[in-house]
Image (cartoon, rainbow, N blue to C red; front, side, top):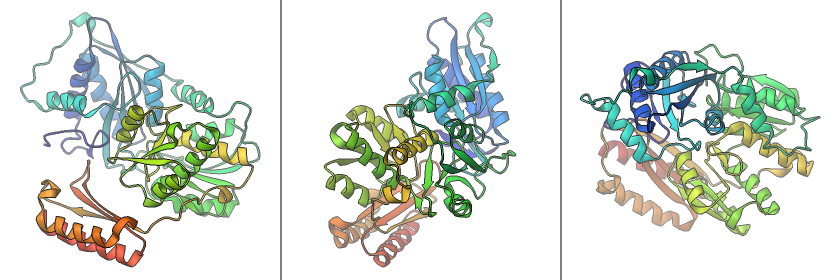
Length: 450
């Protein structure tokens, strides 16, 4: 059992293996319910999930723990992560809970929390909940029998979220005449995303919209954008949209099948928002993983790129602190703070479509603003974690490579927040050198952390 349950995006792991077990979910429900219970009034919590088979058992366990702690539980069924963030705010709930392992296979699942304002919990509160749940001697402060919560389901949660996302699109604008391919990864957005686009007038072609509990993210969705790219070309569609299992990230494909990742999309949106005067300080917030080309693009267009640790919640924290209105990750998380408190794939897609409509040009003529630097990422499985700066040989090799790259390249070493991996990333102008540097570093990592 780990000393801390939460990684960069909640708790996550293989189903029925510690910590991703029903008994831990029950204890997390108790811990979170007691942590957020204040006074004697009844409290409310919204629970949503994606389409994984294991979602049912974790939903029941969390509902039991939260009810026992005195929370009224509102269950939405399968719904995107950003929808739970929205509903938590909209329904004046004290807490939101999402049961999802995002882009991972169905054999994994996860649990993450939102506060009453729809923001992911900061590290210190996650640690409080984690400590309570992991403590075998924890004494639970149960409420009196008449203060126990009840669990109910709401049937119109999806419709509420669709109305919300459509209200983030210009009211006089439609998608009439656009042919859009949507790949929902057999995940949480399988009903909502196609319906929202159709209600705005688009002709929608569905992929990955037939979940069976086992096929989420299975060679579809944002991890496999070539699937939607092929379908766009086959159907001669105008645009392709690929979401992940919990629909908080987005990858887009233009009419020629060219794949646009989060960095390309952030550049496009930042340019449009700067032109509208909607980007305070012309500041874009992204993580250390975003391509160097994005940083150069912002600088050349009179703006700046602010970097954060990996994880969209760290991006959001920096945006709130600095007053920034646009942020995201290379992986496709995009946060439009004017509308949302977390990454939202459908909302981001609508902002891209807004630009296409405003310019009345094909996406291929609007995007592709970045000439991406070659970037190599190697995930090295490790057996022990120690501060990377104490690995002498690794630091020496890293320093040598950084000197050779100069200001036209970067080296990034970091531990995964959810898996026993060290991520090695090298970026530079020459692809062959970048690949060799990454392999050299990965070899040293494997030797020192074995």
